[in-house]
Amino acid sequence: MAVSFTVPQRKIYQPIDTVESLQQHLQWAASVELSTIPPYLTALYSIQDNSSWAYRLIRTVVLEEMLHLMLVANLMNAIGASPKLSGDAVPTYPSFMPHHAAGGPFIQLQALSPALASTVFMAIEQPEPSPHVPAQGDYYDTIGQFYKAISEGFERVVARYGAPAVFGRDTGFQTCATWFGLGGGRLIEVHDLESALRAIREIVQQGEGAQFPRAPNVGEEPEGGFEHYAQHADGSLTPVLGTPWELSHYRKFMLIADGTAPLPPVWPIGPDPDADKLVGWRRNLTLLFDNVYTFVLSSLEAALGSKDLKNAFFGAAFPTMQVVLPALAGLLAQIPKYDAADPQLGPNLGPAFHERPVPLAEIVARTDALLAVDPGFGPIFLQTWRQTLAGVREQLRNSQKSLNPKA
Image (cartoon, rainbow, N blue to C red):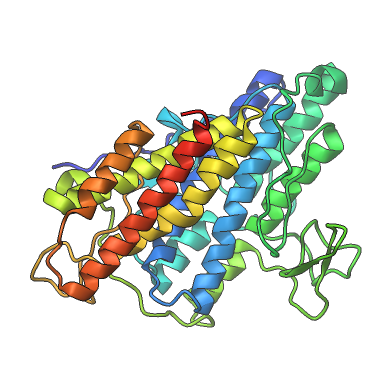
């Protein structure tokens, strides 16, 4: 069967000069940020030792990509729009980066390797060759140039229409009430040009790195510019002195690519998993992951486009991301595609990240059905299977209660 993927098309850059064009570019930015998360997560889930340096590096990148997605959501809500995380906004794999120039990185979902870190992940986070490179919109060479077009777009539309006409459209759905750990970076509410540009700088500096010839001193560092922060009793954060200046995503992947961060043992996830190419319980387990991933996206879309942050985000999307997705992906990564295959040699199953919307009640029912299955890999794995799926079911039921408290 032929593999289909998105082929980038050459575009001519048109400067952003209307609020509607700015909204469209920010929606593309949301799709760009979203497109990086599945390949990074697949590499993360393939790592067998979650205390390894490589695991910790990639995990911080994933958390910051989520931060970037929510910063884009705040930027959109500030000018009267909300991010779409469904339908054509959801990337499929294998594919190119959304709106990237031809010749950009070709992305497949696969186990971590130095080659993956260097040829794909570093290409995604490629820094601008110079601070003076031009802005690029719907045909960009680097993500920094794409966000430069958005920054200039904010400046242009504010100069053209005035700040009240641009930021007076605020939906009221922005949020800063989300915790991303003690790494660098934080959410920024956007209410004017200065805060909009600050939010964009946060995204670009974490991804490809700031144009600093040296690590900056305290007081001049970019927002969230150190790797570790301490939280004080009043809720404020300050850098932990003696810890390193925050590494950009590009530099973190370089550490893995050049062997500075040693490659830990990984599960041999076969490239580009797909439930439609499987049968039986393997297909059903892969479908379950897809269903849960889609539920996370729909909950995020609801949370970032409404005031229902407590239920849609903290009650559904966030705990499902933190508990259910890694549990299911970890189970998939240990299972060989064929009964006679060795799970240390593979190819193994893996998360497909396909959009497959079904009601939450049906997801719970599918989990129940899988709990009754014996995969046939012996009593130790069967215990892992049942404990994992029981934990998944419990969290999904908690999400049901959060979304329907009166049910």
